[in-house]
Length: 194
Image (cartoon, rainbow, N blue to C red; front, side, top):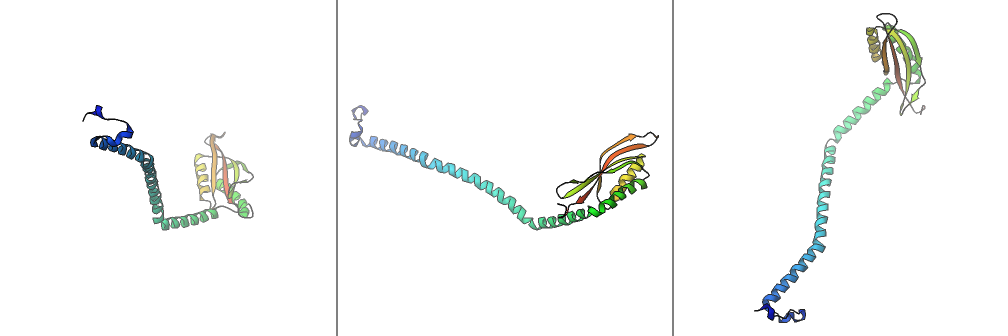
């Protein structure tokens, strides 16, 4: 068979030799198969890849939620404990009627420590989310150990009192120091206060 003797006109394809017909049919089949894979299957492969990634993400989410679900009883117990602790801490915050007594307790803690008060100035309340803070400006004179005892006495009070902006400087009397500080006490805002 000589390839030059074949009429390559597509309309004469029925007269081509059998080997060339088979080759032409195979080539057309490969082209059709390639087009079908490209236009149909590639999109499905991309979709499969997206779904597999989503499956991995969902498995991770499931595992996290399962780990939380396994520990649900422990979380509930922890929440209950935290609510009890929060209740106990709220009880350490004075109410409106106890603020005056607490101010007296702070001044008595300083006097019991041997400190001399140069300034004891309560300021107005500052409201926060669920509590109000009551700052008290203090200027006291004493020794280093008396300051330590004062701080210890404040910590021993049944109500919460914190010290802020503490600065120490030598006093005019030798061996003595002056402490400038702001003591803050807090009270819970109940339904009437909000």
